[in-house]
Image (cartoon, rainbow, N blue to C red; front, side):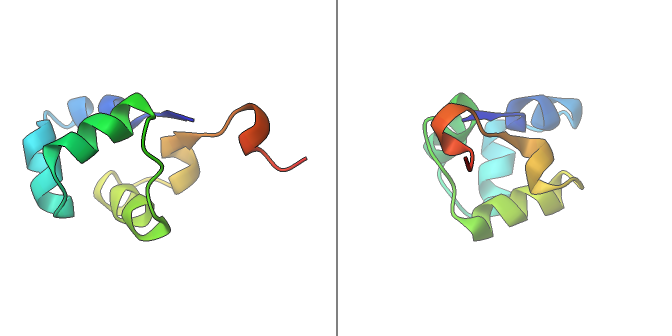
Length: 69
């Protein structure tokens, strides 16, 4: 899974630490999310979409076997 979290975060001149505080998660979680190594809960994905004022689909790009066939 690819994400646009880093892109959206940097557009807002927000640090990983600032985003982690808004979401009440660790900075390591933000790092993992940005690298696509961590699949967030629906609640966390929704919070991210609210912060960046976009849809969940805009933030997360599902590939290959992650898509419904």
